[in-house]
Every structure is written in structure tokens, then in C-alpha cells.
Image (tube, rainbow, N blue to C red):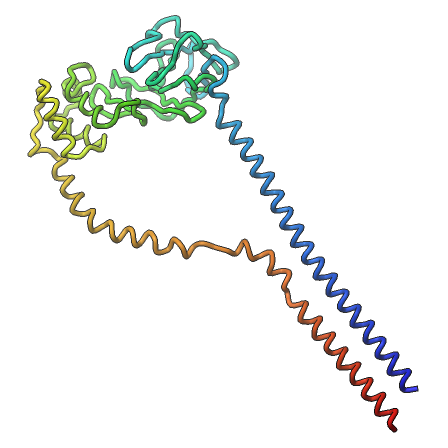
Length: 348
């Protein structure tokens, strides 16, 4: 009788342990499946987001530049009022005007409300071409560099930013950029010696621009600038060079070159403010560079994180496996005890 009871108890224990193991395995599978689903979902979301971002970026960034035969101007972005026609002024840095100022050839066509176009198919636009957009040849943008691939692009203004007109310092021009982000506004020295623009023409740099300023005798030369800027020639040379980022040695060299070519400049190197600034910057740079390099690199590697790569696996290994092993071990010990008692009973 006892043997039957022991057998039944043993069977019950084995069934219970099997159920526990199965439940634990099922739970583990659910956890793993959830982790896999999360990983797949995250991957899908990332792929979709990346695809969407790429599509949007391509659509916005291209602005159809290089397509068709027209360039466009967004008059709504200019803030200009009470005008009849938007006009287009085109010139080459080397050859001068292509569409003259005030010419009817520069009249643009209104495509839709506020968007104007100009067909440039009859003009061979190459390197170092610039343009200006105006309202009835009155209100105007600043200069904007363009190229053959500007066809299809749209010029957009920043109505809150006005820059000095490079010919007449009493006038202001509205800042304009291409929607595609290509090219930029040519760097120029204005009639009173200020620097405007953000992009050098091809073949030009700060040194050549400075030399032309101090060696020529036109409306944009240093001789013209000192008539209106209230500065001495010495100060104008130093200030212009500082804005262009030139050193004392570069200025000294270019002034000597200009004087050798016949320019009469009232500039004394011993009185130049550039000389003192160059010497002070060179003495301080040696001490500051060593400290800045060590300080900038000290925390660069400590900030790197790996938490994202390990977070998904931590939910799977949650300790359920150890519990299962303890249950199985307990069942086995109980079974051994039952067999031992049955054997003892039989001996008696």
C-alpha cells in the first residue's frame, strides 16, 4: 500500500516539476520574443525614419538646382512693398555688366504669387559671375555669386539682415542666399573700407584683395575710403588688414609691393597696431596651446556609452533559470527520499 502511495506522490512531483519547467521555458520564450520584437521594431523604425529624413533632405536641399532654364527669386522673403517688377542684374567679375543696371532686359516674370523667374538660357554663365535682384531698380539685394548649376535654384532673402552697399555706404542691401546653399556673397571692400560678404571669388584671397585696395586709385580704393571714414590712412590699412586676418609681415610685404608699383601710402610700420598684436599673440600662444590640448582630450573617451547595446539582453537573463534549477533539484531530492522510505519499508 505504501508503495502505491509513494509512486503516486512521485508521479505528482514529476508532473509538477515538468509543469514548472514548461512554464518557465514559456516565460523565457516570451521575454526573448518580446526582446526580439522590440529589436525588430526599433530597426524598422530607424529604417523608416532614415528613409524619410533622406527623402525630405533630398527634396529640400536640391531645390531643383541645375534643372530647366530659369532662376527664381522669392519676393515674399524680401519684405519689399509697392513695386511693379522684380529685376535681375547680371555681371562678370572679369568682364563687367552683362545685363546693365536699369535695363529692361533684366525684368523678371512673375510665376505665381511672389515667385519671380528669369530665363538665363541665352547667357553663358561661367566662373566668377554675380547677380543682384532689385525692386524696380530701387530696393536691392546684396551681390550673390552664381554658376551654371544655379539654373532652377531660388534666391531667398533675410529681410532682417541689411548689409552695407559696396558702392554707396549710405545705402543698405538686403541679404540674399540661394535656397540650395551653393555659392555665397562675394567678399568685397566697400567704398569706406569695410569688409562685406563671406566668399572669395575664384582666384582671389585676402592678400590679393588687400593689395588691390591699397594699390588702385578708384572708387573702392583706400584713397577714396579715407575721404569718408574719418580715419587716417595708417589706421585704415591696419583695420582692413585685421578684418581680413592678415599679419603684420603680410601687410608690410604688400605695402612695399604697392609702393614699388607707384602707390603713395602714408603707412609707417613702426606705428602699426598690427606689429604689437602679432608679438603679443605669438608670446601667449606657446603657453596656451599645451594646456588647451591636454584639457580638451581628458574627458573625450570617458563620455562614450554602451548602455544602448546591453539594455535589450539584460531583460532575458533575469534569474528565472536559477529558480527552475532549484525546483528540479528539490523534486529530485524528494523522489530520492520517497524511494529510500519505500525500500526501508520493504525491508521491514
